[in-house]
Length: 225
Image (cartoon, rainbow, N blue to C red; front, side, top):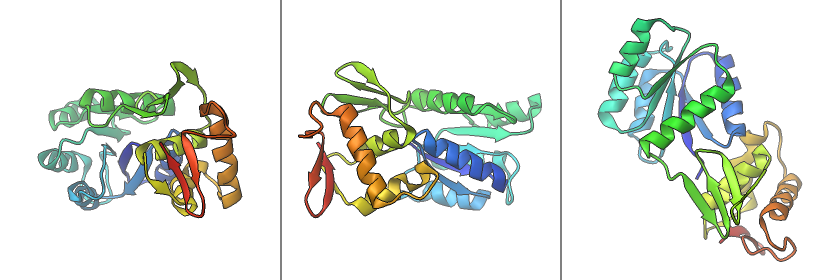
């Protein structure tokens, strides 16, 4: 499955922008605005989080105390995201167990690089997924077929991650649409999904006309083997 990030932030514009950007990069994003909601999600095993991206200043509570509480209950990596770049704030965050610290304003690509670096160091997620002779480096964001790197659009990459994370399972079109809707940043309908699966097959299958990796299960959906 795609890396699942919990974004703890109370600025609506930042929530919208960061959520869309991170989803385009292939991450799954859940957002909350306060400390209590964040801790509740961390404690819920069904949420299945991989990393927490958190602002120090929150609508309810604060990032420092939220980080301390999260670290006391889990081994989730935490990255602080804040406009406060003074030395005291940095040291306080790291002393409380934060895994990294990035100040606003920041370059989005730098944030993604820091996220992937923290995930690699923490060993919290499986870094390489495989489908046939296709390997997906979920932290590096690269895809290779028979050792050669191939290039996918953000939505194609998101779709491939969904299949890789559900290997051997039949996924309905409705399930797939639900997974890629946010990554597209626009309305995705059934016909669009078919087009993207066709494009993905053209890049990863030896013979797209007779797919062996992403197979159609008539009347039900698709299955990746």
